[in-house]
Image 1 (tube, helix red, strand yellow):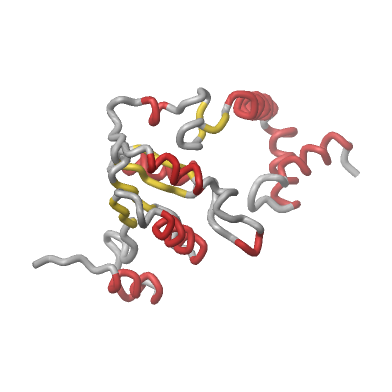
Image 2 (tube, helix red, strand yellow):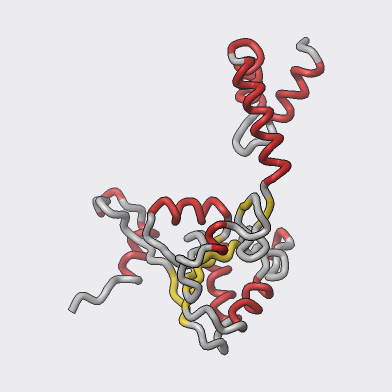
Length: 198
């Protein structure tokens, strides 16, 4: 039987997504036996992140300040707002370097069975922001899951009367993809959302 502190470390590591008991035990053994310096660095980084990282008061993404760098930047386009489900989506879009607008992070998607309605993911606050009149286009970039699609549809319906252009990110065949390897749902979406060339 390992020490109580070791078991406590294993249980703490199990709070991470997709980490089961065996993976947590291997990580704990590695940190304690082979990489004590790394363990101290990890503990320090976790403490700093948990202490200082918060939600941006404007877009709800992650920030060390009340307003994140993207929301505070005068170089970003205030008239285009990209609605995403999580800060991870913001990171992915930013890495693509193809977007210069601002964001609104819902913090999830609609899931009535789990008790997650419009209020829980901040849709009323999003609508209030759109009513201010600065945003001219909303890009719905929720995930291509059933819940993500339902969330996008709900936002679209809720914004029907607002003078805002609503767009949805394209879905379908990935760049460089071969049709024979693309799943049927993705191919169906690609055909449905095909682009006019002439």
